[in-house]
Image 1: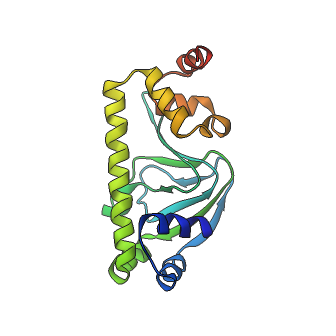
Image 2: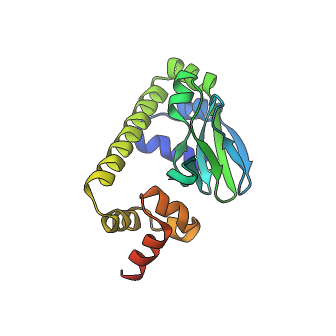
Amino acid sequence: MKNLENCIREQVDVNTSTVESILSRFERIALKRGDYFLKPGSVCRKMAFIDSGYMRMFNMADGKDITLWIGSQGKFITSLASFTFLTPNFWNIQAITDCQLLVIDRESHFELCQQEPKWLEFDNKLLANAYALLEKSMFAQLHTTAKQRLDNLLEEEPELFLNVPLQYIASMIGITPESLSRLRKHR
């Protein structure tokens, strides 16, 4: 749980007893490559911290596999709208590699928000970061070239290219695998 503790401490100033209280609410689970954390239509009642491995959020649209986001070690993953509002989820969340997750259920999460002000502060930062990431992604799709999106991803998360199938990366940045291959060739 050291990775999760470090993640929390990077965002909020928190004492040891509070961290221990927070960490005690998480359960470790393992997913094998290809296992699903969540499927469309179900209500999401858990949020996961990726302790190791890679996961992706995706769905099918017009027969195409569309990757919204790829999560890696040190990041949280959930269907935010479903988790928060108990609405049916739109996304598949699947392990790309074998994964170790630290999972908190919805009830425990919201109890922590009421009982531990530092967890609420951390949760608010998680939400703000998620919104900022979505905003950045939307801006990039509208105002940058495929080459710029690829260059940004290579700079920010080069390890994705060593651990994640290229078709998922291509989909996430809004291009075809063939275009990704051409762009990488001309780098």
